[in-house]
Amino acid sequence: MFRKRITNLEELSEFLAKKFPHEEVVMLIFDKLYLLREDPKKYAREKLKNQTDKDGRPLFSIEVTGDIRIVYSFEPKNCTVFIWRIGKHKKAYRF
Image 1 (cartoon, rainbow, N blue to C red):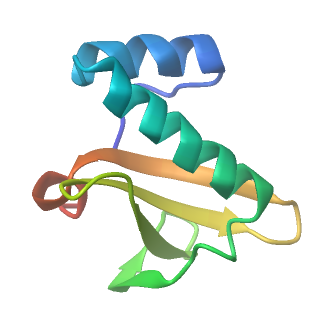
Image 2: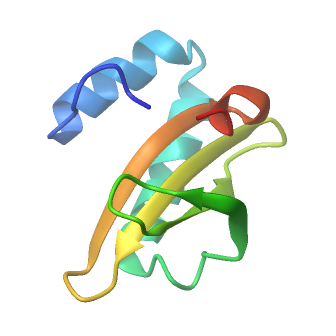
């Protein structure tokens, strides 16, 4: 999970710039985040087995690059997406 709660795009941009030094990777991450914002259910193909967020919603994964994943959950009633991890796939799946 993120070490601190990120509440806006500026904080997210700063976090991603520190974690991923290549601007192209950061842009790919933002592209995927915008896709999730539009329709998280459409991209909820890779469900993590027996893994839920703190409120019991299932966790899903979307591939950014061959090695980088975004782990997220969503609340369909409120159209809210929760991003739990962004990182290399081995670390992103550890909870």
